[in-house]
Image (cartoon, rainbow, N blue to C red; front, side, top):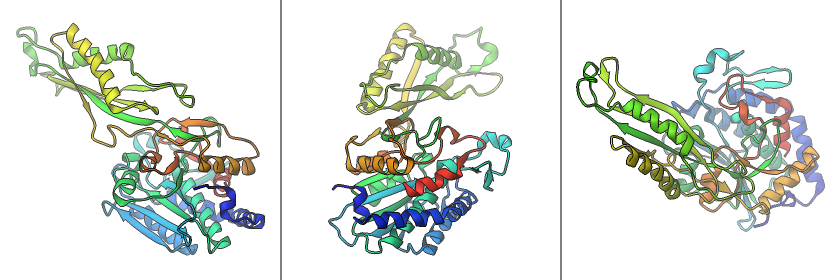
Length: 412
């Protein structure tokens, strides 16, 4: 079904009323973002109940009461709010944001303020999840509230989908909603940040996928004092050799894609493990790899390319005992996501951006995985990323979002 700005109503004054409401609600949107940040929801360990309750209470306070909690596990709630839908023939649109964050992690001492107490400095709102993506969640909520007040009989259906577990692979979030819960719509926009150097850099009709696997090497575990007395294979040394050669020689076959000119990043050694302790000759070692995949790639093709490299290593070193093991789904393989550049939802996003930002935004690929992969896999025309904030600030100390960008997101 066609989606356009006119689907919100043919009267220009309706659009103007929505934008006026959102302009008047700037302080409320900012305050709500601070409430979301103050409700910790890091994955791991994975528990979105507190932030989900803040979200549900606020939706109800704004008069949005058609709310469903969809949860594979009680502590991993997804919040779905429906608006309109009186005409089942009219189009339906999902606006999506995830409500979990990465943990503060090892950079806690680098924060200049409490990560869970949002603080405004120099026009920026600092706090864990500010850009990834609680600012965007707040913008979605207020945009929906403005639409609902302006069009109480909205013929189409707007679904606000606030997903859990995006940072952990979406097993309890987007993947569960798409495959088990049965979430469906004509189109979706995942409102992840699409700024690298500056906010609102591009619209992403494509997002790279991810495949994670381990290279496991076996050796001879024994008393280390005997390593010069008995035949032995040092698993850690063998692993190091494979890792170094893989960095030089591994070739992954990937089709050309106009929006993915950088191809397929292969991130070697994102985790390493080897040996037991002093006095024990290492009999096992492993390293982890994540590959950012692009449209046209398959897990079978990736496995074939890695095994071809390992087979060459085995032939050259008969002592090498090495194995490729993919992680369980969805981490082992989350497919890339793509929607046609001329799809109605893309054209609508371009029109809205042009009207609100005053310029045309280019189409580019989202470097990271989003929940859009799961929505697209069940037939929903999905923009996997288009939202406020800067992606490099995510998962880092002193994460922030420009206050102005949150208001812009609501209006777009």
